[in-house]
Length: 485
Image 1: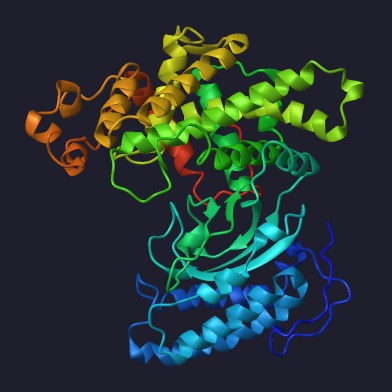
Image 2 (image 1 turned 90 degrees about the vertical axis):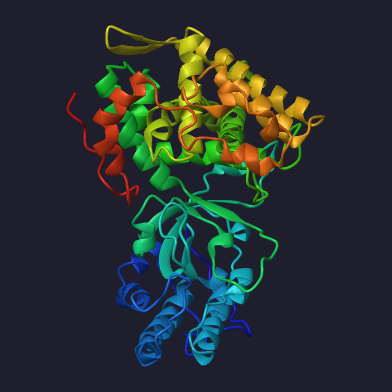
């Protein structure tokens, strides 16, 4: 969609043109010399930064100022193409200038972060220029300057879904257009809490790059299906050939998942408060939200399928059709990618994938027979919802339990489906001194790999490791090659 020009504001960046007759799309902006100069100079600037984001060597300050002499005019030149972000880009200019004037210490971009409000502009195809010193989740742990061009994904049916029973005013769905090295990684989120700032504000948005999620899903699931000889349902197979369709599916999955973290019968705030607890608690919380998205998709598909097609409006038909695909996405991403991605050190997403696979297998809807994977799709929804019920019941009961008793019950829930490590102190029974002691003793007793990979996953990991590694830095514009069986 086109980007509309607004009247100049008092925050206008010095030197920017007052109007742009025909703002370019963000993809056209990516071809401009000003963007290339900005991106390349940010990359050079990063080489001067320490892990905390500062430029510690005073002999580098003149060079850093020279880089800002390119970065700031480039931002000013690009700003008219993003009129909806005028206040942010003006504040960004001031934050960079203050950082320079204060000697390039630990950066503080709170003012520009507060001015950046992408959740207020959820328009399909709308672009943003984003520049911050920041860490990147599953990417860079150093607080380096990143520069991105991104595009909003907001189809009409998602707007209708969000306006109804699945409101999530903080959620922003994005697509990569171009980026600096912190995002040439596995990072698929843009979260305000990763930005360098002097204090923590009330966060008003969170963004996920659905094009990266969709692209790696398509590559990994295609390879896993061929390796396991899984015959995909026709609509699931078609999704692997359609990047934009898969992106929309992931937007629907994530918007329901994201809002689920604070909804339900929760012990308190099981995930978002930064607390030290056994990693399998994080596994259950992330899986709970994914299974909530799954069961909501089942409900939407079933309820809308009961109505004649002619009685549904276009958004309702799209919700119905995408709801079916969300169910495939949750199953396949969890069992094929999550379970064997990352290290075996407190890998909570990996554990959630293992748990879902084993639950499906032990409840007779997933079969590994004659080295071929088969799935009884008509029976899957109710079996997955049963696992969701188990986790929800754990949470409900834990409202009345002490924290450590909740932890013990959670370990027992996982252990009923997955076999703990033979050396697990939790499985053997924690000693009385640990049980009577502080929570730290419980957490310290958890093995890094408390629930090791099954023999099935050990074998699959060897065949899939290179495919999964190849998805680092992937975007929706990258090809998805067919893998040899």
